Picture 1 (tube, one colour):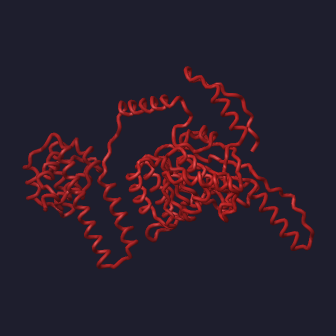
Picture 2 (cartoon, rainbow, N blue to C red; picture 1 turned 90 degrees about the vertical axis):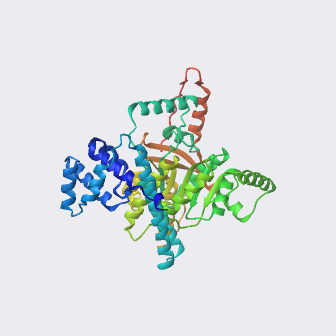
Picture 3 (cartoon, rainbow, N blue to C red; picture 1 turned 60 degrees about the horizontal axis):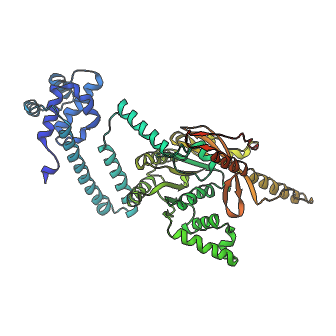
Length: 481
């Protein structure tokens, strides 16, 4: 049993090799940790080597001995055993074996920890799961090693990427399709490993906006994971069915539909029955739970191409940290998870109400709640803005003021079937910022491309010369926003 947990001969050989050939310690110090060694005396010697490396002092027998004596941890017998061990020229296999046994020891310690918090401390099961998830993640992260990529490797990978893009026919779309042509043009889609933040004030339609993207993807047969912390899965499905069938959401909610609409709904239901959409509407999840659930789901369904969290500020923190620190841990965790799973993660976010006191209420990066870490970690930040929301609100406030003064009020606000909307690209790590004009169909909670751009895109695609890969782009004057 113990042989599976450590190999003292391997540990001695590694330490001996470092003493006889200190030049290799730079590389080994990146791969190995002090805790990877089983024997405490071996841990102390490795720690002394790290100290000497930081001091830029020789890593040899005399200097190691000096450091250990100063720390009152020198064991002459252990040092003699290491010096008498045979140095090895190829340390890779030895290092791999030491790392493997170190991981097993950490896992064994974790099982003891699980028993302690479950039986002795009698913690609630949900809290036990949180502790286990966090510890397991820490163990796996510590055990992962990586190295620099050299220039030939990077050049080869880059050329393979360029060839893949060429094979797609010079399409502007590189990442996951957003469902909107102009937004695809400006972002090239949501890239693998991207953390995308979609932020807005309440009632602007950030959930509706991302559901348009979700609907577009599932109709293409692509997989979507959706963490709905604000509304139950059935409400999300109602919105998707409204988007697909063009039946007003309110009619779907009460079942007030014509025979033609019922027929359209049945067709949409059949399509959704085969959709690769997975919704978690538990209502409360922390970064460790989300990480575990998404890893498991992605492993079971590799076809999942995007994950959505609605919304970030509802996610619960871990421990009793300050909320800003919790949000920082969440945003960083989401970014690392996106890179690990090689897929975009889209997180919806609330904006501070302070922007409503400005004359121009279009959002800025500083308007994001707990904005510092979110702004830093995100690859793309999109703001959803509809001016009609504020026009309607101002009209209601004028009506209320008039009634309070006993005056007659005549409304000048005209409710529209379609309202102008803006998607403001506040940040894009690998592309331009700017804005995209859309239309919002209120009764359907559906965003669509503005007609002027949609027609322009059709003209562009018609004039593509696939042989020369040149595009005759017409001059289109975009409407003022």
